[in-house]
Image (cartoon, rainbow, N blue to C red; front, top):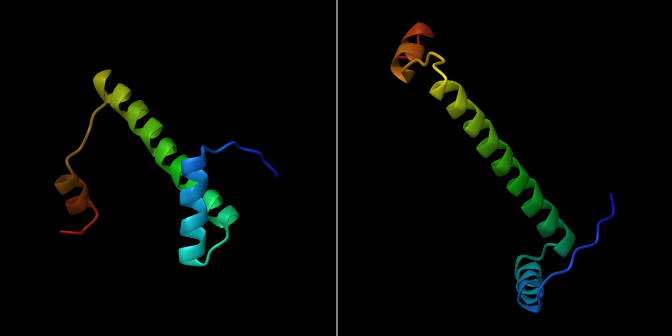
Length: 73
């Protein structure tokens, strides 16, 4: 999907320099950065939802108990 963004001069220069030094297209750098950011943000919101469930009383289990149950000790 084509997308248009505006970058500050500083960010544009950094992107250009990194692209040149790493011999990677600017588009690939931007795509990878967005993919990584979205993955991190998704994890963050999953963690927030889990925290809310815990605050509401959802039972939790220590990792050692889970490892033992799975035979991973």
